[in-house]
Amino acid sequence: MKSAPFKYAAPATIAEALDILGENDPDEVKLMAGGQSLMPLLNMRLARPELVVDLGHVAGLDFIRETAGGVAIGAMTTKRAVEESELIRGEHPLFWESTVAIGHPPIRNRGTVGGSMAQADPASEYPAAAIALDAELVAVSKAGERVIAAEDFFVTYLTTSLEPGEILTEVRIPRPVVGTGWSFQEVARRHGDFAIVGAVATLRLEGGGVVDPRIVVFGAADRAIRIREAEGLVSGQPPTEENFQAAANRIGEAVEDPLSDVHASEEYRRHLAVVLGGRVLGEAAERASRESVGA
Ligand SMILES: Cc1cc2nc3c(=O)[nH]c(=O)nc-3n(C[C@H](O)[C@H](O)[C@H](O)COP(=O)(O)OP(=O)(O)OC[C@H]3O[C@@H](n4cnc5c(N)ncnc54)[C@H](O)[C@@H]3O)c2cc1C
Image (cartoon, rainbow, N blue to C red; front, top):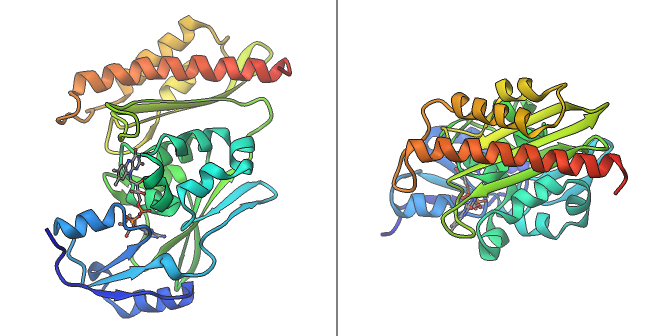
């Protein structure tokens, strides 16, 4: 099937892109990054915008920059560039791991960091990593710049808190505190598929107890969700299998109304959330303990 006809604009600067957005009805405009998710929607006529604004020629949106607090990644940076970045692999290994779990090399060659964040697919790896890492997303509009915490950015299925007229320009990821252990695991039907369910954990170990745990589950609900109830069960406690299992069980309870579709039933998704939740806590603790003995 072919898309419905649309007009096409290829601005060269952010200012030009914002002007175009300002001149058109926001409901009739679609921004395009790599087009990997957008083009199928257009071709299936699930989206019929009057105008597509291609961000591919906009200067200054493709970068990976070390900052005082961590790293800033431009919205039009491809996943391949993230995968090949020694800075990301060395200093932000959880984000790197979430990148290489996305699709296959051709997908990562064209797909962008900003496109995946803005697409807000509940089974996508990046939203979960962004929430676990306390990332911030930067949006610009005619009104100026807005910095949005990742947890506030992903609202529900394919929906973010971006306002009409806003363009996502940058993702900021803080440098992890020394000694942070992390784990990223997912279950997919085949390597490179979207996850059926995935889980992410980060934590530190201090004085024999778990400090600052983060647990995020994706693919199980309408968006990636941080499970604070489970974090509360391990925080300050020794990193034992028993405590992690109790937290994993709490994850299963906290995932209300899991998705049920052709890929997996509600029960199976809940089961995966529990199993993966336990595994990521265990692996994150193992990494944190290696860090703390300097291994
Ligand atoms: C075969 C296949 C397998 C895949 N597997 C996975 C997978 O395992 N995990 C995964 O996460 N993804 C997967 N994807 C999706 C892939 O990661 C895409 O890169 C991602 O969906 C975004 O595509 P894009 O960067 O080309 O953005 P586009 O398709 O161009 O845009 C996606 C959406 O974001 C909006 N948008 C884009 N950029 C901006 C911006 N700067 N500001 C505001 N809005 C913006 C667009 O308007 C559109 O609504 C897969 C895709 C394919 C085709």
